[in-house]
Amino acid sequence: MDAKSLKLEQEKLIKAIALDKFFKGNDQIRVDTVLLMKDARIEFITI
Image (tube, rainbow, N blue to C red; front, top):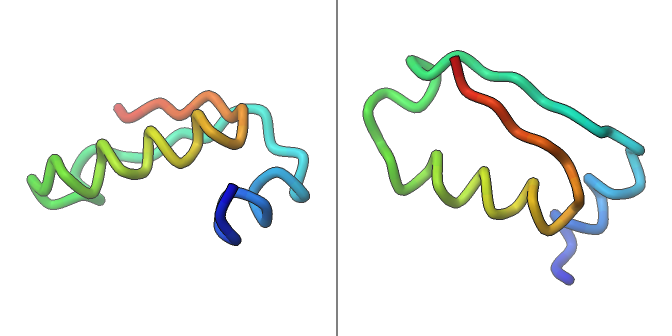
Protein backbone atom coordinates (compact mmCIF):
# COMPACT_ATOMS: atom_id res chain seq x y z
CA MET A 1 0.00 0.00 0.00
CA ASP A 2 1.44 3.38 -0.94
CA ALA A 3 1.44 6.56 1.16
CA LYS A 4 -1.64 8.02 -0.57
CA SER A 5 -3.69 4.88 0.08
CA LEU A 6 -2.57 4.81 3.69
CA LYS A 7 -3.54 8.45 4.22
CA LEU A 8 -6.98 7.87 2.69
CA GLU A 9 -7.51 4.81 4.87
CA GLN A 10 -6.60 6.77 7.99
CA GLU A 11 -9.30 9.34 7.21
CA LYS A 12 -12.01 6.65 7.62
CA LEU A 13 -13.91 7.72 4.51
CA ILE A 14 -16.44 5.28 3.12
CA LYS A 15 -17.72 7.18 0.09
CA ALA A 16 -16.50 10.04 -2.09
CA ILE A 17 -18.41 11.83 -4.84
CA ALA A 18 -16.88 14.12 -7.47
CA LEU A 19 -18.17 15.97 -10.50
CA ASP A 20 -17.00 14.40 -13.74
CA LYS A 21 -15.96 17.80 -15.08
CA PHE A 22 -13.32 17.92 -12.32
CA PHE A 23 -11.27 15.48 -14.41
CA LYS A 24 -11.53 17.67 -17.55
CA GLY A 25 -11.94 14.67 -19.85
CA ASN A 26 -8.77 12.98 -18.56
CA ASP A 27 -10.00 9.43 -18.11
CA GLN A 28 -6.58 8.19 -16.94
CA ILE A 29 -6.69 10.44 -13.87
CA ARG A 30 -10.28 9.37 -13.17
CA VAL A 31 -9.39 5.67 -13.46
CA ASP A 32 -6.32 6.14 -11.26
CA THR A 33 -8.46 7.90 -8.65
CA VAL A 34 -11.07 5.14 -8.72
CA LEU A 35 -8.36 2.48 -8.25
CA LEU A 36 -6.69 4.42 -5.45
CA MET A 37 -10.01 4.78 -3.65
CA LYS A 38 -10.82 1.10 -4.20
CA ASP A 39 -7.49 0.11 -2.64
CA ALA A 40 -8.40 2.23 0.39
CA ARG A 41 -11.88 0.59 0.52
CA ILE A 42 -13.64 3.84 -0.40
CA GLU A 43 -16.56 3.91 -2.82
CA PHE A 44 -15.84 6.62 -5.41
CA ILE A 45 -18.63 7.97 -7.61
CA THR A 46 -18.44 10.54 -10.39
CA ILE A 47 -21.54 12.40 -11.47
